[in-house]
Each structure stands twice: as structure tokens, then as C-alpha cells.
Amino acid sequence: MAVARAPARPLDRLAASVRGREVVTDWTVGEPLDAVYRYCRDACVLADLVTEIRRIERVDDRRMRVHLVGVNGVPLVVPVERTADRDQQLVAWRAGGHPGVGGVQLRLRPGPWPHTTRVHARMWWRPGRGLVRQFAGDPQRRLEDALHRMECALADRLADGEVAPLPPPVRSGRRR
Image 1 (spheres, rainbow, N blue to C red):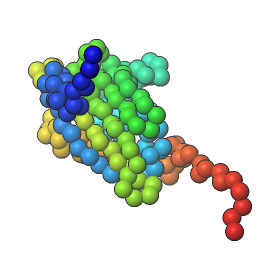
Image 2 (image 1 turned 60 degrees about the horizontal axis):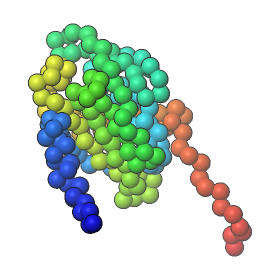
Image 3 (image 1 turned 120 degrees about the vertical axis):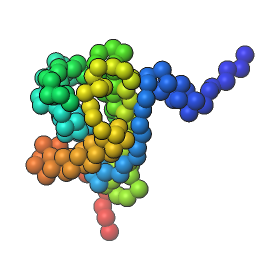
């Protein structure tokens, strides 16, 4: 019995239509892949990316409560969970509990130049949900602005020693 595997693209579109709307962008970050990955899997990245966040309470390694201010100044507390974490390849976050009202997925790979990282970012949300209405502005522009803030914040954290890059590999043998 032969089993055919469906191409990934139609399945991604189907999943997006079930989830709601999404925006996608690619971004090259001028930092090493390992540092970008460690930064993205930590909850601190959310405060750097979403300007409305005022405070983050950790529940455990994957879950947190995010305190933010909505469009009309209304304080909100939103459960957020890291839903995917593949070593130096993928980090995903979902907001609003299960199944979620929105989320972000970051696929990471080595960049085109030494010590750079290519980030494929996808932000999705379900239209008509109260939480989504709290964020003003063009979603594509918000995602691109968030990635720019991420790059700046990561550079600052690396300079301060908060996110340390992995040490270079130890080479064995003699060089001539």
C-alpha cells in the first residue's frame, strides 16, 4: 500500500484558514544562531517585541501570565505558552490559552553571512476575538517593527552579557 505525503504549502494554508489570519516576514539578524535561539525561547523576548506589555509573571519554564495595557488603557492579563521549541530551529508562542487567539512562530537558520541568523517569522490571530482587538496598527508593520526591536534588544543583551553566545569550538591537532 503506497502512502502519499501532501505538500507542506497547502497544509500550511489550511492550518492558517482554521486559525484565522496571519502575516509572514523574513528577517536577517546580525547575531549568531545560538544566541538568537536562546534569546527567542526566553519569556523576555515578548516584552521586547510587544510594546503594550508592562510585566511578565513566570508560571513555569513554558508558561507565563503577561500583563499588558490595551488600546483604551484597559489592563489585561493574558496566559502565554511556548508551544514549540526545537533546538536552534524553531520557537513558537501562543496567547490566550488553548487553542489560542494568537501566536508567533519563529523559524531560525544560519544567515547568508558569517555570524548572522535568518528568521522566518509568522504571526497569526483569530479575528473577532477580544484580545486581538486590543492591538492597533497594521499587523505586517507590527511584526516587522517587533523583529527590528528584537535585533536591537538582542544586541544590547549580548553586550551586557545577559545572553551569552556559545564559546567557539575547541580545535584539536596542531596548526602549521
